Length: 502
Image 1 (cartoon, rainbow, N blue to C red):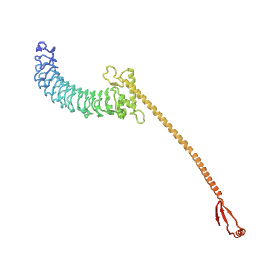
Image 2: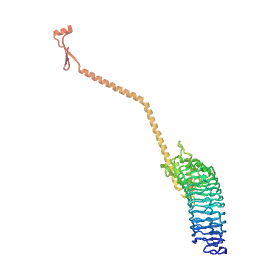
Image 3: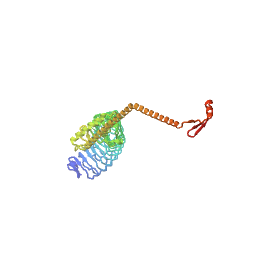
């Protein structure tokens, strides 16, 4: 190799002034005589280890790229004398551990990339003394925990990426000292709980990414306010419950992702704390389309920002697969007991009618205008993105509702008319019943008398047929005795053959 100080670019490297690019050359060691280099890239080579003092002659370096090699071991003094280095990239290697004092020779380090390695643990003083570090990338490692106060000296850090690791829990003081941290990445880990108390005194935090973990609840056990936190991503977890007061500690939250969880409803106190939201995603949850969903439906109907349109009912079976707002409108879930529509129902109908009309005029399709970065999101108040199929669904729902109303009115009128006819029949019967009873009694009396007369006549006829007669046949002498002394014999005969003797 030729020394760079002589103005000749070392072969086979590529040079740009004092910036040397020795990339993809299958190098197994660091080239020599590069003392004047201000920047050195050794990416995509075959380096397997970084030995003590290996870069000691490169005291002018301000950035060093060692990514995409095969580095497995890094000795404690490998970066000795590199005080001017501001950027160090050791990503995409095979590093499993780093000594405690590895980065102490780099007090001016601003950007450190350790991503895509095999780090399983971090030494408690690994980042000690890095007061100017602003960006630390640890994604795609095998970290299971974050040591307490490991970032205590990193008071200038603005971006910390711990995503795609195996973190299962966090300590309250894991992020102590990060007063200027604005962006924290914890997505794609194994955290089973979201507790905002894990992030105390992160007064500058603006974005928190916690999607694709295994969290089931969101709580806050610390009375603290994050005034600058504007974006939170909790999507793709198993969240079933959110403490009602959680979002009161983030009063300026503008973007919230809660899609692909297991929420069945949202508490009214939570909805009341979403006063600054301009974008929210809630699809892919297990919404229970009963009266529990009324608070959410009412809030969505008046929400003026962006939200996803595919909020589908998971239960009960009669509403499964229906859009939440459609179900509220069609099944009158939020009507009061007297039957008049609730504010949620009325607001939903009004807002949907406006959105459909506005988008018919605008002519937007399902995915919205070309180039819209939000895809399936829609602006309800402005009607920026509403699907054409939604208008058809809404018209069908309105038609079905009108038919149901007509049926109810017709049935009610028929019932009332039938009742009036029944009452009239009862009244007429009541008025006419006494006269009819008298007539019936008189008729029965006449029939009874006729029957008695008939029986009497029959008896008299029988008696007439059995009439008795006396046949006197006295002689002259007996006849005289009978007349005078009133005794004698006589014969009584009963027609036709009976006879009695006295």
